[in-house]
Length: 119
Image (tube, rainbow, N blue to C red; front, side, top):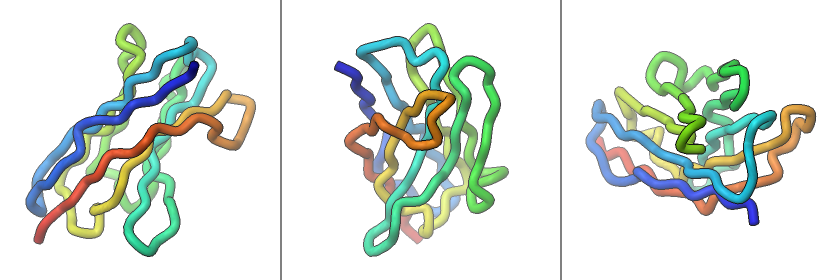
């Protein structure tokens, strides 16, 4: 059974940092794209960042570029989202997701982890 499990969320003051982790299990994710998304209360889910598990190609949303860093540890089957200079508008539930590189739709999702940034 394919599973993604996020961790690392919490409460942090504006300007602070957090690192989210996404542990993948159940199959090899080689040939996959791993993404982070977030959903704030009353808003639609939005893309945050993505990384090609095999090739390392990386993409960021404009709103987080320069503040967030996505990375992967293939040996640990884990993807990270290092978040710095956090703002109250970064408050959301953060989800990890995976898709085959040939499929534009993410088809495997984690349960989410809450990030709250206080002003």
